[in-house]
Length: 388
Image (cartoon, rainbow, N blue to C red; front, top):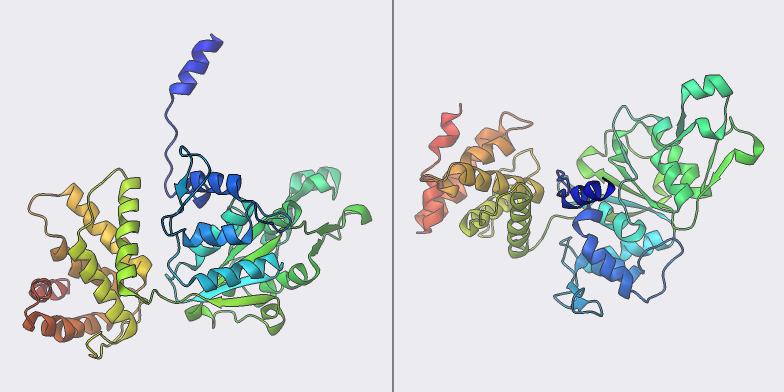
């Protein structure tokens, strides 16, 4: 019977999950890099600082590994200056807090996760900042049934992700820290400066949790949310700040949108090829509306919504998924206006007028210049009016 069960278990396919974390997506790369990494590593780190940067920025096609069967070219996972990643790594190696700031959709959270995975092996230790986040979620809570039965004992303590990271010597992530109330944010000050967390309810022997080597904290904040709950000067001093800007190069942004959209389609069971014309148009429109100016020098009335690369990926994926579900006579470019309106119309009713103004300006001018794709897009202006 035991043999039959083992055989059945071995033949059972691995369970699929939505949005697998980075430690699963890049498990093969991480395993090879750890095997061949001979550079000095800070205490508690799984990779050396140089290998962490290579893991995130890629190795330009150069394979790592000593065996042909395991050698891999490390893929680029974050599009941005290598210098920024190096500064982030140096900050964490120096056991200082790292604050990633920037506009929404600039991959701050993804970068934080990649850093945590490369250094600690997992990005699962995380706190999501909201207006309802409490100090207990940063420090610790209690199993109240056990607390009432036995009193304050170490086994009744429910550690927060921050406390777990301190004990294990790992990286903990704090998303959207400026959405938390100031008094909640300030619970981080003593943790980042003293590297210990006090638990006064316990006896002297257990009243302090000290950070093990490798512990540090990566926080993110959106520039547009700084006014929600501005960080105190004392908390800011505990962090090194790095600003994550939108992708500057249009070709690299097109490549990223295509690659990421293809990966998302593959994860959902579709290998539909990404339409290159769609991506080129989509990225150009997003960049025009994001910056308020076209490459030709024409002024654009920017919508209040952030036209991020992440939103461009979502639109490209949705359109190509629609083409897979409803292939008959499908023209990807014809679906752009409706999806764009869905992105733009989130905060301000006047954003519809701004999008129409963009259609009557740059889109129409490019169409008159004899550019076929823009002529097709210009002819679909009515789609924006039909949704009124």
